[in-house]
Length: 243
Image (tube, rainbow, N blue to C red):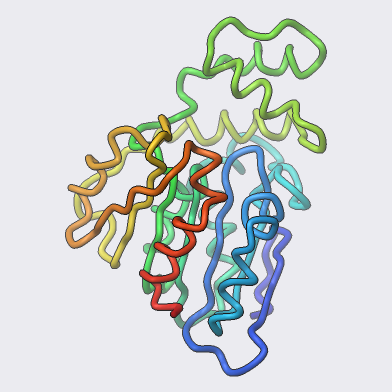
């Protein structure tokens, strides 16, 4: 697993012989692999079950370089960078959360994905209505935007250790090709996981109808709580056959 990629990637191996294919974990917007996955115990749980794990940072997130321009931050471009992480694999399972789930939707056409877990996914393009200039102005010391969505994004890109310019470039690139899921796009076994109190995942049953044979597991928590909760991890690991 030494494929060249532009992304920073954490790699974790089980102590003994692998019990199944590697698992690629794709984190959410304005986060990183360490925050979403490592601190919540995912690599530890998966390697204990015998699964190798790959944890990349998305462009402009964590230790990965910022996208050079908007074109380098489109869904196709980022999915291509993620695919390069697993380019040498003959089979891979993928777990994506929030933005990571939206990007993971694209991966079965680029990688030999065996099974797919999509957590905290929005059935619509989440960045279309964001006022990027207002969010950047807040990050530079300006007033908090009055629009609730833009205010939320402004706070996210301004968190310690974040690169507001790079993250806004990602927003511009991602919304240049809005998420438009269609029937027949996914043809691999897929499990959706949604927090009971997560507004981001409202309407996820509409995605379920587009993926024949898929199922939905509802777990406790809001958008952040669902990711951190044990029920999400259990639902994902059970579906991947890690136990």
